[in-house]
Amino acid sequence: MSHISIWQTIKEDFSQPIKNDPALNSKFELLFNYPGVWALVNYRFAHKLHVHNFKLFARIIMGITQFITNIDIHPAAVIGRRVFFDHAFGLVVGETAIIGDDILIYQGVTLGGVNLNKGEKRHPTILSGTVIGAGVKILGDITIGHNCRIGSNSVVIKDIPNNTTAVGIPARAITTKKDKNPMAHNKIPDINKELFVYLFKRVKILEDAVIACDKSICNKDIKKKDIELEKMYKSYLKTIKN
Image (cartoon, rainbow, N blue to C red; front, side, top):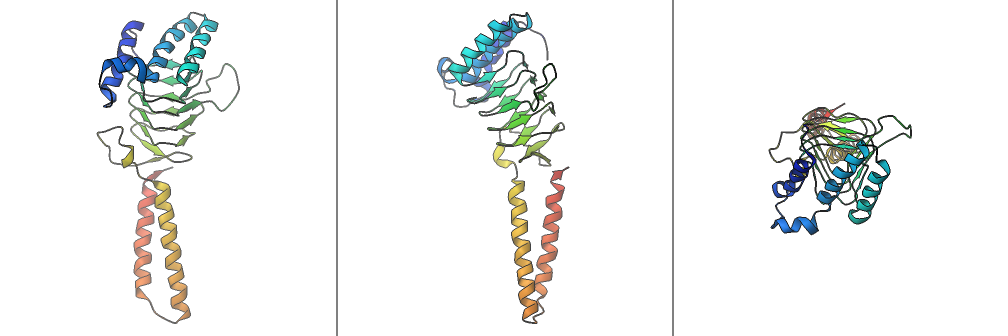
């Protein structure tokens, strides 16, 4: 994260909705419709105070900010440049969280800790270029790599490598074609759905096989379906990186 003045950083903060939100029709709307921007700007001042050991004042600023915006950012967290909190209601950023540059985070995201050991790093590190979907929970001292996409409502509890899409509870890294639009969450595959479809088809084949045996029918179609389903299952396994 490069070091520039706080005013230059805030100027960049205000420019992010213009670049990332097609719903913005006027810069005047920034004053009333973008709580994520205001929470981030207030954090910039609070963080500066926190670093210079005015920790109580920093907490007061962010406490008032939380009351007004419904966004909870600890002033000790480290947040880089050109970060955009889109909608942002319900966003929680923990004390030891680190957010890199050029990050897009939607509403309801939690960057939380999993232990109460004071003085330790307890919260996630998000590296540059990552997009985090609505409702995602990223928990513990883990690292989300550069240019990752975390699907909405996923729960991430382990490191995610660079240039990876992760979805699910708990989140798993999956292989997908890289989309030029980082917000195209609708193109992230539903791995749980794929598994359920496989299981339903497997049960149907087994039922057909049992019926065929009972009636002493030699059903060649069952064997063909079984081979096709096995190919489908192997394809499903390839999408998951353990």
